[in-house]
Image: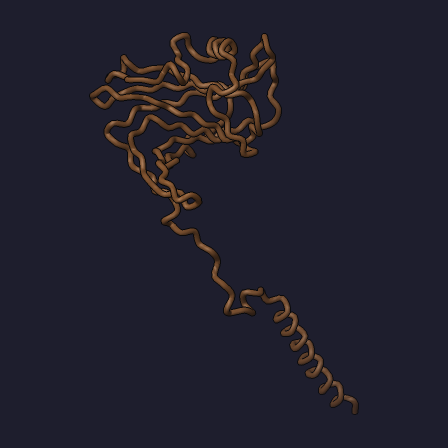
Length: 225
């Protein structure tokens, strides 16, 4: 006798459940789905990204070495020391005028040789580099062709900034460059083919010992800077 009312109630409950579920789905729909006229995501203009110039026949052979943090015992100061070799295999004399900048993880940019006492630089050379290695000023000049005329070099920065993420930029070994316009000032700017490598020193370093920064050579890249 009561079968008919129950039969009516069950479909009605199911219908109400579906209605609630439909309303719930509509409520959690993303804004983009509910707003068909939403603005599309901003895509960087490829024209604003400098295209890397190809290497030239006059480019020098740059061979990076290690980046180490070393403590200068007499003063207690700590310094980053980077070693490298530069060779000329172009068949003619080439001029080498390098620039070494270190971008630290907190945005601090260190310029090689700045705020480095001369005496401390010599002690760092003896600790990390060879006796024949030249600093960033001595190494400048004409390099004769041939492996026998290759030069060893080293550069030093005071240990400042966040060393957990560092990027080294080196320019001066490539003849490739580009001209552009600074959008902020309207003035002409020159960018040069630049080599970069990312380094990192996880955790704290023991000031009593030199520590080499880790890197992944597969992530080295050339860019215009």
